[in-house]
Length: 134
Image: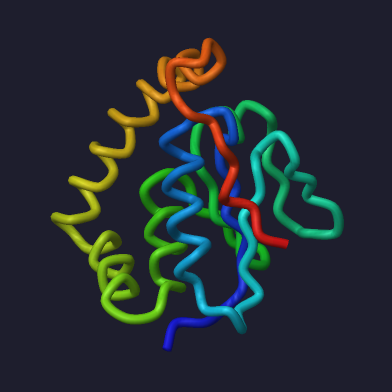
């Protein structure tokens, strides 16, 4: 069973990001100490990892202890904590050639997410936050 701890930090203005985080948080094990937080609500607090506003605006992040993962690697880490086959998918995303493909796909989507966020702000796309878990 996939368990663990960590924080998934995502763009709460991006409809696709919110939808994906909503799905993944519903599938994390109930007994895990994993949370998801919007990047505009992130505070490193007592954590040893610090992320700048530029880094938070650039990509999704996974923070676990003193480790931090960006973009496709963050998604991989989040999927590893989902029980069952999705945990295997998360592991595969860290292995070449899957890691190369995942990284490229992530970059393409991330470059276009600002367009999606703009559509959300004008009412053209939904922007419901299902993702944050306390």
